[in-house]
Length: 321
Image (cartoon, rainbow, N blue to C red; front, side, top):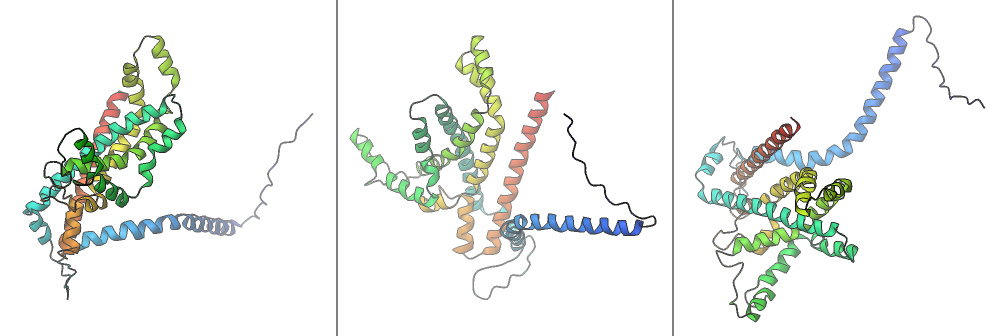
């Protein structure tokens, strides 16, 4: 049986000497394609322009002015005056140091906890579905709610944590009010709330690891630890890179969680740079100076992230060679 291949309808031949008309039709078709592409791109670009690009440019500009929220603001262009003042601001640089410790601690501890939980959820367990749902509960809670719940847990008088310590005869601690425990206590809350998201990403990565490699290595006598180190961990490297990068950036720019928990106290021990910037802008009403702080933080994150990306690129090139 002979099958007939579909044939396309040939375009009508242009009459001789119709080159200008053909060029005109092609130009009209090209303009229609550009309008169609523009109609597809604009809806996605407009929110980025309104909510990201315009605030970023406005913040950069305000950093070079004496803008304030006080009466009769002048908004004069002052050049590098805010940045010269910022260089000698020891309170800002102390908050910057605390922010780096905070972001690095949250990123690393969240990764380790999420990796352990993802390995557990990837194993053959009973009630695996229920366990996965329970593990995701912190993800469903807004940061403010998380902070309020943990304030109750850390309460020195009525908190269950101190009550549990008292049951074993251990004296209670003012977790959020003591200079030595405030920052670790806040880091624990941030790690707890960030575990579910990282766990989901790592679990998805684990399920992409070929089981044949594990089976072949097990037949060759490789232990579970060696299989994890030489098979699972290299396969998860892109996911781990993404998680640590995003967690570091998000943690460094944290505001709501710490503001509700400690408001930067005690004695500035948990004063993150974003919180310090907020107080400068809306308590002291120096928006120009606060914008300069924000610009420095953006620059710092870009530098750290670029260095990390470059190191990963060098490592990838070395692995390929």
